[in-house]
Length: 144
Image (cartoon, rainbow, N blue to C red; front, side, top):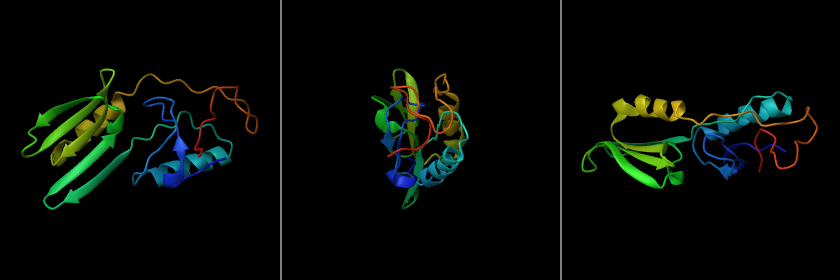
């Protein structure tokens, strides 16, 4: 079974193996591409989308990358909360999400840090197309 868009629940090995729904603007496209590869029997390797969203609030742009909700250690990485700032969300000492209040010129830097700081990943074990994965190991792709 495959699902795309906001209804898709999937593990993201970038963070852990817990299936979650991610309701951000890029996820419908990311999950649709993955679903197509899965339905064609192609092994696309680990599915590692970087969740992101933005919102313009009057003169301030709010941007988020990664999974801030998974970070228990929250720190201002740059700037000042009274004007513009980048807030980092860490889990087990690793940056897992950022929220940017303004600071648009720093977006590429922090997005790149999140992409570069992914843990070492291994390809999940799976059988040939059409056969179930070994017990306890999810097949790569989108699931509800």
